[in-house]
Every structure is written in C-alpha cells, then in structure tokens.
Amino acid sequence: MSTAVAVRLTPPLDAVPGLHLWPQLGESCPTVLLTPAEKRVLHLVQLGLSNKEIASALGRAEPTIKNQVSSCLRKFRVPSRARLMALLR
Image (cartoon, rainbow, N blue to C red; front, side):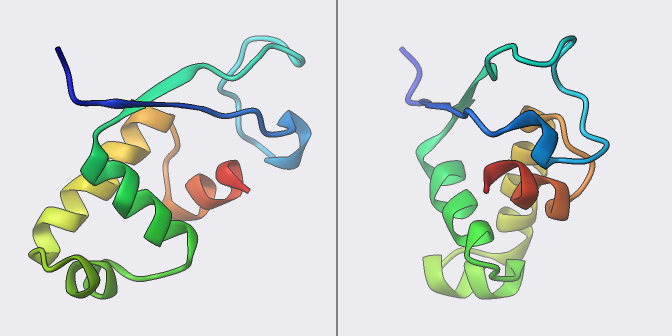
C-alpha cells in the first residue's frame, strides 16, 4: 500500500486566471495524491519559502526539495510555483 496522502482541493475555479484543469466550470477538483514529504514541502511553499529555505528547515538537500516541488507541479498540472500557490489559496 502506498504511503501517499490524498489531498482534496476545492478552490473557486475563477480565482485562477488562465488555469484550465477541469473540462467544465463547476466540476469538483480532482484528488491529488501526495507523499508525506511532498505534503511538508508544499506547506512550506505556501508560506513563500524558497527551495533553499525549505531544504534548511527540513534538513534536506536543495536538489531533493527541487525534485519534490517539481513533482507537486506535475501532480497539480501547473507550469509554475506561482500558479501552484494561486491554486492552493
């Protein structure tokens, strides 16, 4: 069994200009599976920390954090950290 944690998001779709994750407005947001490490990193991304600051806070290497942030971007289907933060507001 996977150790991934399910996170269900329900942001207002019109709050993220140019973001098209759902075929039609009003559909519920898909479930995104995050590992516990990705969930910790994502929380710190939401607080506005840089990869270097996150690495320091979690005692991890900066390339590891970069990989986890990239994984979150893929899972949420967003092209940038800014779009990810906007989606999670």
